[in-house]
Length: 210
Image (tube, rainbow, N blue to C red; front, side, top):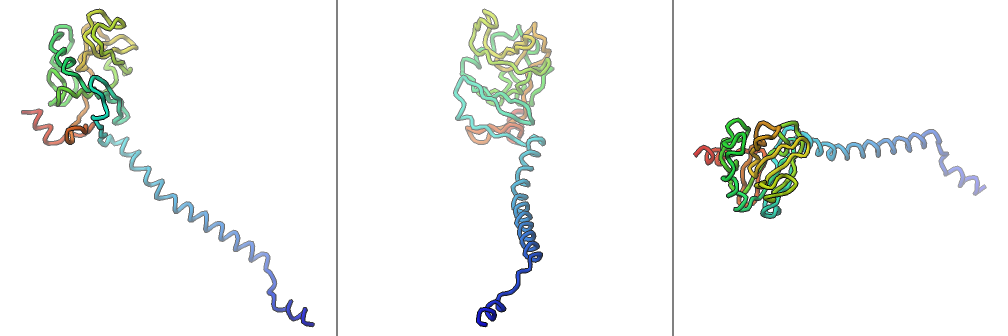
């Protein structure tokens, strides 16, 4: 008798209701996971659109050795950044007669880089790293007299695709398939050691016009 009374106090399990609750709980968990992921997915989108829009790229110049080059990307284009030695800068004055466009009159660069150094600061060279012939990537050949280029080579860039040659300011040599100098993107400096590719400031524009 007591056993029967105890059994009466235990509610009957509704199997269909139990299955519904399990499914609903699982569904809520899945929705929660999706909602939790949305902020992370959304946070990826600005960086992708930023790249497409060509937002500025900052470069820590202190991490580039003097006499060396590093490659960065801006608007999906390779950008060569070279910390030139005083000797590299001095060599630019010696071969104007061997160049197609020594004064960069027919070439593309901001006003402040339309000079012999093709730079805002002589020691920092910034170039779009694609050959102006057919878009290959020129290789560094910084050593003067490099036998892979020529005995009288002053140092610069050599395009392996069709043999275009550029000096240490990205100016194209006579006899090269490329007709104009390597392009210089807009850029500026933030402090002494940060280069900002893709950003012209009023200060840098004013300095270049002076």
